[in-house]
Length: 209
Image (cartoon, rainbow, N blue to C red; front, side):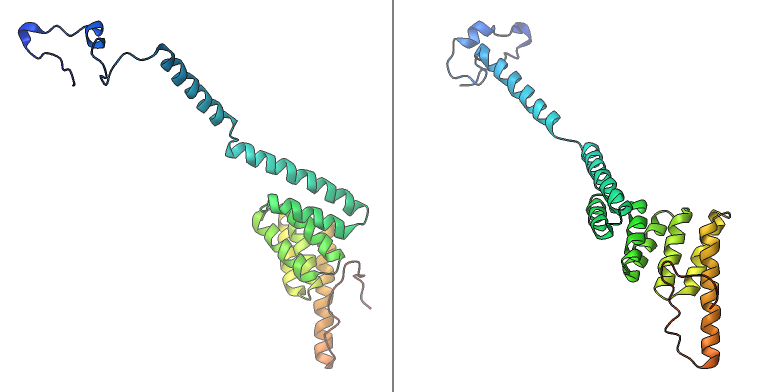
């Protein structure tokens, strides 16, 4: 049985809680004093669980720190000439931070040392897409293009680097190398000889033969 307040204006007194409590099984019976304590404990527990969950920013920070750890390991291995081992560390770091231009440029350099010009070209291209105002990334892309047999594209990349950093000796020297290869290729074309040897490899001399 549900009790309601008396709506008669002449008798608007509400039933006291004591009177209501004398009826059993009411939907608003007096609650056990411990009930409120249990609710409070449940709310605090839920709040504590919510606080324990790491935020997206915290996870991003953890991934970044872990990626930097692997990057540092790769840097040390590359300095020691252990290029394949360095590449493995950088690949792991890139899985955590795939949009890191520095890692991609470093990866391209090591791939050039390992003779994988095509993979170096892809990594360096992505680095310039992410950091188009970074001269060193354009230089590495130009070298990758030279190693892949594309001196014309390389000249454009070195030109981009020099537009950003006009005093870059590396870009100036490498652009001369690319120009020399284009000149040599034209000479081979005019003589009817093969142009298969127009690929520039890391460490090649820039002087004419």
